[in-house]
Amino acid sequence: MLTSATVSVPALAMTHAADDALPGTTTSFIQHSRLTGHDYLIQVALPKVAPPPGGYPVLLVLDGNRHLDLFTAARDVLGRSGFDKAPANLAIVAVGYAGSDEQAAATRATVTTLRYKDFTPPLTSGTAPAGTGGGAQFLAYLTQSLPPELASRYPLDLERPALVGHSLGGLFALHAQQQQPEAFGAIFAISPSLWWLQENDQANWPLRLACSEAAGPVLIAAGGREQSPQPQRNDPKRDRMRVQRAMIDNAHAYARQLGERCPQTQVQWRRYAGEDHGSVMWPAARSVMEMLLGAR
Image (cartoon, rainbow, N blue to C red; front, side):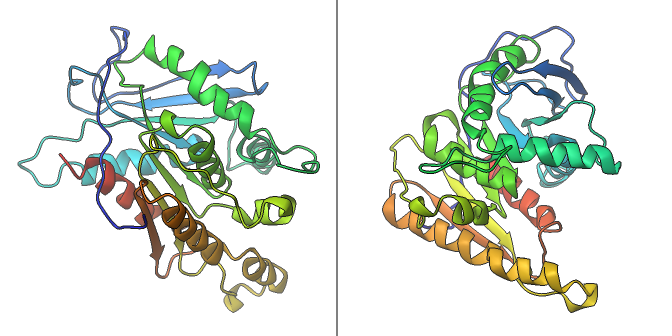
């Protein structure tokens, strides 16, 4: 069912927490995953209020090195909803890569390589391009390896966290929704790189989507300028790529198809006018917070 309803993620069971997990702090740790072979920088931004009895509800943010500050600011500003309101109680868990500095060209290239490995799903037929197709292992890391470590450090409700991803991270978020719908309270796929599936998994395109009664709500979104040429940049090759990858059309079609095939799942589609592939995260962060905090 494709709708525009506002949704929320409930807090369920509180985990054991460390004494030094203070409200209003942001702390981090590095965790190595045997499943993926990668070292992850996990940053946890706790809200300024004490945890509820069940623990803080959680938003998992992919590309955490890049997006932690944006989502933390969105929570702290939008979650208050006026001077007379209490701050939002949402904990933000940003999952990024250890030792990465996206301002440096060398580490940007390394992060790109890691993202292609972690965020792309295994193909249903054929052979995935080298360095891709590790989505199943990364999903297992998020659902099996990361939660116990978080539980030992912070008062979090980890039963069904929400998950947000952008670009390749958005593609992974949709993969997670299809493979383990019961694991996530809500899925936010912003500008998902569905072109990767279209190019590499043609036997499964159009996608054969699965439905589950356990699936939480899904938001799929894209920027209104993502597949339009930008003559001011004088980059014809990139303009052709933008058109060919059809970010808006593919994302909209996926949302419509998921809503039609799975009427029990709340599916929202949003197109942010005037936004490109990078700037779309600004309004998207607001939408994510409105949905997660809307029922407060």
